[in-house]
Structure formats: C-alpha cells, structure tokens
Image (spheres, helix red, strand yellow):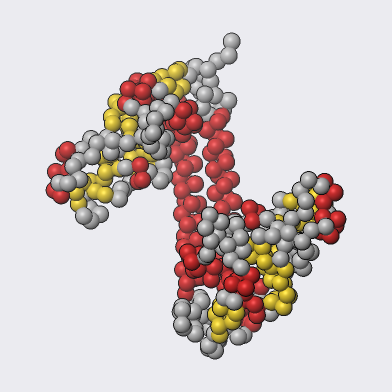
Length: 404
C-alpha cells in the first residue's frame, strides 16, 4: 500500500499527508480597493499602509507596495496580518507571496490567513501546484478563480510541525536566492552606469570617468574603420544532410542574447560542402558578429572560426582592441535601438551600420583597460547568474521531492 508521503522527508515524521482544501487551512479573504476617487484614502508619498496589487508581487516575500493607504483608506480596506499567503486569482493567475508586514490588498488577489498551518509551507505548496491552479481558471475573456473555487482547491499537507520544518528550510533557501539575485542586480546596475560614464556623452570628447594617465580627446570614428574586412552570411540548404552536422560552428540570431557579448555557443555546425554551397563564409577568429536583421542589437566576440546566417555582419581584422570595440558597439546599438528602421522585423543595412560614428580613444592602452574592465564585469555577472540558476534548480528539485 503506497503511503501519501514525499520522496524526501525530515527525520522523525512518519504520518501520511492529507488532502486539504485551502479553505480548511485558514481564513480565505478576497481583497478590495478603497475608492480611488476619494483622495482621503490615499497617500501621495511612500508613507502609509501597504496595499498590495499583483504588480507589487515580484518576490516570495513582500514588504512594501507602490501605493499606500491613509488611516482612513486602511479602515475601508480588507486587512491581513503579517505572514498571510497572497495568491493572484484574476488575469495574472498564480503569483504567490507572503506579506512580511500587515497589509491590505486588491480584489485580484485571494489570501489565506493560516490557522494552525505554516504560511511558508502553503506558499511553496501553491508554487508547486501553480500549473494545476491555473488550469481551473474560468475560460472567459479574463481568467478568474473566484473565492468559492479558491477555497475548494486542494493541496496535500502534513501536520503543522512538519509543515514548519519544510517552510523554514525553503524560506532559508529563498533568502540565499534573494541574496544572489541582489548581487546580480547590483553588478548589472554597475555595468549600466559604467557604460554611461566611461564613454563620452553626445557631442563631448572625454568620458565622465577615466583611467589615470589618459588625457587626450576621444575621436569620432565610423564603424567601418574598426576593421579591415567585413563578412556577410548565408544558410546552406537545410534539406541536404551533407551540409550539416559538420565541424564548422554556424551561428544564427537565436544563439545570441541581447546582454551577453562574449563567446556565444553555436547550436548548429555545417560541413565544408555546406560552406562551399552557400553564401555563408568562414570567418576568422577574433571577429565581432553583429545581428543586422532579426534581433538587431545582439552581437558577440567570436574567439574561434565560424560561419553565420544571413542575419549577420561580421567585422574582422580589427583596428581597435576587441573588447573595447564590442562594448562600444553594444552601447551604440542600445542607445539607438528605438530608432532602428523596420516594421514587424526590425533591421539595419550594412551601409547604415558601418556609417555609425563611435567615440574612440586614440591610445590602444586606454581601449584595452576599458575593454578589460567590462570583460571582468561580464564574467562576474555570468558567474553570479550561474550560481543563481543552480540555486533555482535546486529549489525546483526540492519542491518536486518534498511535496506530495
């Protein structure tokens, strides 16, 4: 006889878990909105009582909100004590959080005020049950799970002490994930700030932040002067197996990510016959591949020989330091992303791209220092992203194995 128990369990717990309706785990409350037309209900600044809407739910713990209630508005709102479980139930179904401060909330959210049950356990159980929860939303123009249906939704639960142990473990895990996410966000913000300050602003000749020992004005250089040769690309006939699964890396736009400019991995490879039988070219290593059609703004340093689809222009035999060049071009493309011509598929011509002017220091040593700085920053960002991804995968595995 199979017991209703999880694959991984704390020692000392042996009882079967039980199916319980959410309405049996505590008091279920649907939020409301004090009249927005009555100014006395709302604070214009960040002071006042927390009032949570779905847009405020961006993490598993919520401490604050975009809008705040006055004492009068608070009296008209549906209030929750801290450590309640909030779950979005209209339109954006299944966003989950625990309020860490007393809060009110709007009508798109159902909340559970736990009674003799653990909030962190319920939170993670609902995260685990999100696909099943979303599936019961009414098939109308706007997905909705009303209070009655919400109360009847079932999850499998152990006794309170085991819930508490599981909740504490996962809460600790979430705190570590949050810490790594903050570190990652900080590094990304530092990179964004440095990209603004280590390159001259429009119509200026020196950057706001500069390495010691460099004083010369920067000069405006056309991108065509960054390299001695450019290459286009092409696609070998996909129906011919003799052209594919060879040893030559062949990249397409989907292989690149907007904010990752170092050493893209090619998912596909072509043969020498594929190279000879199409418009694609073998491009020398230490070139820069720039997407000019689908996914304009994506680019990468390519430290190995490669070929590309027709969506690329590659710069080879560079006249500037390669890491400086990649970040300078990236910055320029990001600045101009909103003005790229096109309709459903945005694109840029070869001549338009090569005619773009980019501020460049004349000394190669300054180029090297700037490029090296951003390369190190990107390596740190990648390292923290990998750690974060690994932690999230571990959490996912625990959710699968610690719940029934």
